[in-house]
Amino acid sequence: MNSEGTLAQALCAANVLQVVVSDKPDTWFADAENAATLQRLVRKGMVTEDSALHDALHPVFDRLIRLFPLPKEDDQQTEMSGFHQFVQKTVDDGLQNATALRGTLLMLRSIVQVTPERIDPFSAPLMKLLNKLTKEHIQVQSATQGFESGVRLLTSILEISQISVSFLGEQRKYLLAALSQLIEKSKSASLCRCVLEIAREWALHRQESYPTMKEKASILQKMTTFETRGEPLFNSYLGLILEIYTDPSLRRSDLTTKLEQSFLLGCRAREPRTRERFLSLLDGSVPRSLFSRMCYILGVQSWEALADTNWIHVAIHLLLSTVDGDMALGPRPTSSTSNVALHPFLPHLRVADIVQPIQRLVFLDSNVAHETWLSLFPIAWASLSRREQTDTTQHMISLLSKDYHVRQAELRPNIIDTLLAASNLCSPTIVLPPHLVKYLAKTFGAWHAGAEILQTLNSNIKPDHALRDTVSDALVELYAEMAEDDLFYGLWRRRSLHTETNVALAFEQNGMWEHAASMYESAQAKSRAGTLAFSEQEYCLWEDHWILAAEKLQQWDTLYEFARSEGNQELLLESAWRTKNWPESSETLEEQD
Image (cartoon, rainbow, N blue to C red):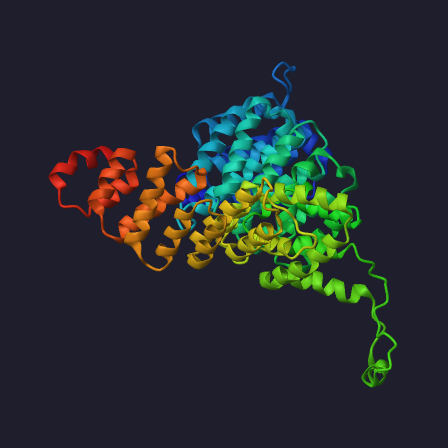
């Protein structure tokens, strides 16, 4: 069929054949003479590159394969053995050599739809072809010529693999690897939807041992990347997650356990109905007591899936659901004229009429959600018993210590700022580790919330308490980072053990750097001579602020020598570039590189 004329005649004949046999019963196809004639007619057309011929002849081929399935290798010879040998050889050659792929894949699909186990001899070349096409697909742009034809071939292979996955054996790992690559890197929406439908079939309808529950969960977890591929695709994925969580047969299964982080993504879906369904399911899965909700929010649930957003709207939803929504919320009877006048116009409200809109609206504005949590959390905290407050504090410390929060360090407000600010408003005070508060304040920009917490701790702790120095250390470092110089000096002058420190800080605060440097030198000399007892923190202050004073006085030669003797590389470089002895210093500086 090399010439256009021959191909046109063949296509015309194929279309006539399709029309003639379309209404024939299976008994007519099963007739030996008819079957022999039909299999001879479809052979050549299925191995061409012409898709129109494939479309015309494939229905005929499909009927033949359903009536005369491909036998096992050791089965006895039949009248259709020649046809079966042709099919096996054609499919094998097509997969091995990547020739006439469309017709080859159509034939293979018909085979596995009837007898999925017959995929076995073709599985290795099929998976090799799949991985080859996958690599080509993810490397080319969607506007490139041939992109869509590649997508169609990949779709055909995936559909074949979906039907016969239980019989792929060791080749299944290559299928899963290709699926993972396509999920993460494919630029084709239609191909991603194909993969999504395969995952839906496996998760909801396939009861066989393979793919395993772990393999299904792994594929579904990787689909969280669909969030960046457009809202329609991501909403379809969230719809599948909802189907899984509402399927009674999958309730509390390994699959739902492994998809917990994917479920949480639905709680921030932009489409309101989808988001409310997820939040409603989450709400129904957590006990409604206040303490249970606090433990769940702060201690039980991992929020890593939402780590790049301020997820406080979910916490607000869960906490507000603890109130009695059926409680009446009408005007109280008073002698106020205004209330009496307005009473006929006010509807009979329930608590739920106020709470439910708040639950829905806080998602829309993170600043409003932040302020709502600052109002809500202290009230919830005050409602807990002392023992429950102790347990909640431990959960709060554990949550604040999680590494994954750093992904939203640049957000304002972020979850750490919200939690710290609310903690500071609680009575009795929530006691958080001072150095944790200092780290969070510096890392997440929660400067004022952190400073207020440490100030509260500092004022409430007794002078002889073991935590006193730790709180003061964290607070003075925070003051220094915030350039709150007066607060820094004031706190150090209250906690310093020696007159020299107090005098030096007073000189420094008034810009008398030479006098301050002299006092710091004197204090260090006395401590080294053993005539002045000192704390580690205070000695570090003397040393650091002597360096600061020397910098202010432009004593870079002195600082250079000091840095060399102490091995302070940062100070060495800082002072070296300000000195003129570059030839002398070049060797030392090169060592620092």
